[in-house]
Image 1 (cartoon, rainbow, N blue to C red):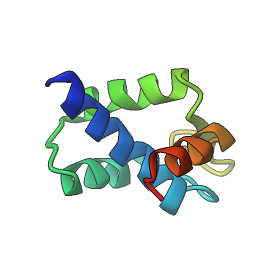
Image 2: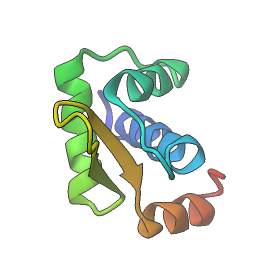
Image 3: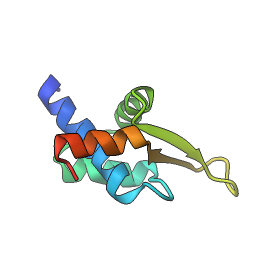
Image 4: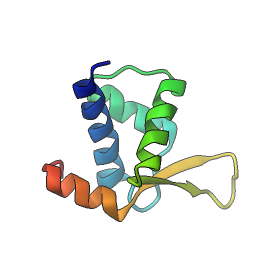
Length: 90
């Protein structure tokens, strides 16, 4: 994947979190769908690496689900909203 493609993928994931997952968060399957809608087909491991990168950059965070510790959901941060606004993604 080229750096330009990786940026498009990460933009798609962050935009999905900002537009759809800001309150309850998005699970891996939904984020995989957002990547697919942007033209990227990734396995779960590759997608998890991209999400981890976005988390480390401070644009997303893992939100625990109180009734089921095994369920993972990610939400956007205020920095993600500002990034999407600055980039014209939302």
